[in-house]
Each structure stands twice: as C-alpha cells, then as structure tokens.
Amino acid sequence: MNPPTIKDVAKAADVSVATVSRVLHNLAGYSDKTRQKVMQAVEELGYQPNAIARGLVNKRTQTIGVLFPDVSSSFSSDILRGIEEIAQEKGFSVIVCNTAEEGKRTMKYLQVLREKQVDGIVFTSEVLKDEYFQVIKEMRVPVILVNTMSQKYTIPYVKVDDRQAAYHATDYLIQKGHREIAMLSGSLKDQIAGYPRFEGYRQALADNGIEYDESLVAIGEFELEASRLAMRRLLAEAPSFTALFAASDEMAIGAMRAAFEQGLRIPDDLSIIGYDDLKFARMVYPPLTTIHQPLTMMGRMASEKLIALIEEGSTQVASSIVSHHLVERQTVKSKP
Image 1: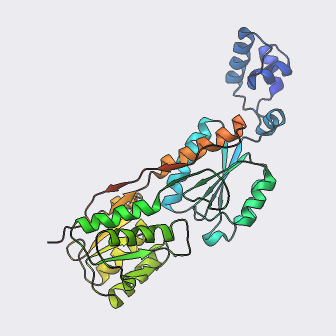
Image 2 (image 1 turned 60 degrees about the vertical axis):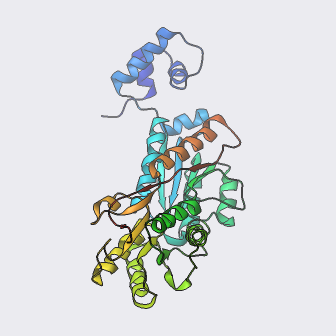
Image 3 (image 1 turned 180 degrees about the vertical axis):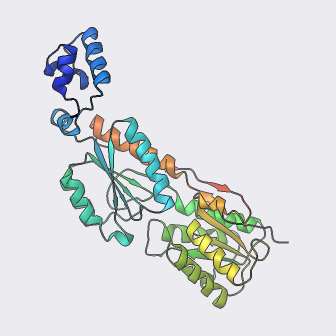
C-alpha cells in the first residue's frame, strides 16, 4: 500500500491541496476549524510531509551535517546524542560523517554535505583548515564548532577551557601531596586540545613551585593502545613519579593497563587522573578520577545555536565556554 499523499489529506479534510500546504507550513489564510480538520486527517491517515516538498516552500532540506574525526568513540557519541536531541525536537534530520583521524576524509564529506544541500554544519574536534572554511563559505550555510575553535575565522563555538581544566587536574594532584607528576599529552602541534592541556599542566606546576621536567612528559595520541605504549616508555625511561595526568580518559586507561602490566597498584603505587569523564571511566577498575566535560550538553547547545542561525536568519550567535568539574573516584590517593 502506497503511503498517503497531500492529495489524500486534502480529500479527507474536504479542502484544497493548497489549504493543506498552508496549514502544514503555518501560513495564514484559513480558519481554526479548517486547521483542525486538516490536522485530524493528517493524524488519521498517518501522513508524513515530504522533506523535499517542504524544502520547495521554505528553501530548506531540514537537515544538518555533523563532522566527527571518529564516530565510533564514546566521546563523539555523547556529543551526537545532544545534537540529535535538539535536532529531533526542531524537526531536523542529522547526517553524520566520519572524517577519520587528521581529517583524511573531511573534504570528501564536505562535498557530500554540499550535494545533500544541508542547512547547516556542526564541525567537531578538529582544526578548521582554510580549505574547509572555503568550502563551507561557498555553501553559504551556517556552521558551529564543538570542542574546537578557530583562531583565524570568527565562527561561534562550544567548548571547555582546556587549559584551565588541565590546570585544575594537575593542581588537584599537587594538593594531594604529589610533586613528581608525569603527563601523557596530545600533540603539541594540536592547538585545540593538545597544547592547551599541556600548558595547563605546566602552569600548575610553576604556580606551585615545581620545576617542569620534559622527561616526565610523553607526547602521544588520544587512543588506548598508543597511550599504553607511551606509558610503558615513561615507566622505563623517565625519572620516578607518583602521579600522572592523562590528557584524555582513553589515555588514562591505556596508562592504567601499562601500569598493571608492570605490577603497579593504582592508586597505592601510582595516582592517575583523566580528562573527559566518558562512560567507561566509571566502569574500569578502579573507577577513574577525571575532569568532566558536559559533552551531551555541549552537543545540545551547538544544535540550538545552529538551528537558530538557520531558522531565524541571524548573522551570528555567541560562543560558549562551558564549565568543567572534577569527578573524584578511586585512582588518586593522597601522598603521605
């Protein structure tokens, strides 16, 4: 059986197709009684307005594109949950694109989103390169950044202050009595999360009179296995340390695995603090002390800002720095 059409609705409500269209698009020119008849027919028939047909009226496809470097990660799924919650509330569909590490497929997916004629784009966790910005500019659609920001282009963003949050994590370890504190850091070329979190770590040491020791820092990737290997190198080559700040929860858990392999007990022999507060931070043993980023809320905020730009035709919305907080669990112990 074919799905009901707008003509079927018009026949059931005993009105013209044009009247049904006006009701569905909240345009003027009909009585309340007529609106009730049309909406009753829509409900009884189970009519679903066609997105392409709606687009002919409002010049929109009611879709937004979301670009993630890794859609399989818990980090991305938490942000996406918030984006989709608001999109569904507002009648938008979401196209999710996995750009892969270092944006290997970003240009390809921007072209896909252009062909799909999306109404706006949420761009997450990656540097907005010049070539990306140029494509988006040519598309003439609004864009919101999440967990990233542009130092070159004036584009609204939603993110935590990474430097301040990393400072908070390191200072917490110091207040627990630790002074030999190592770090697993992202790339220092990464101006979004890598370098700011490293700077927060280093500044916390300086403000507490602790000399920075380059040999206590391992530069790696925000990934489990790479972090396990980086932690093994730290344990084998660096001066002894009693605590570790890992720049992500995945890094922290990779480090915990390496520590266990070396026979170290956490937190008795080594205290570890992470960053993100992903779901599995609560599930590992011992449960991970970490910095909480409100990822789902960040996704909701980004979606709200983007849809406001789309629907209201605003030229800009304000950026948002969202608050982080420290979640104490069982991987940090006070040093006597």
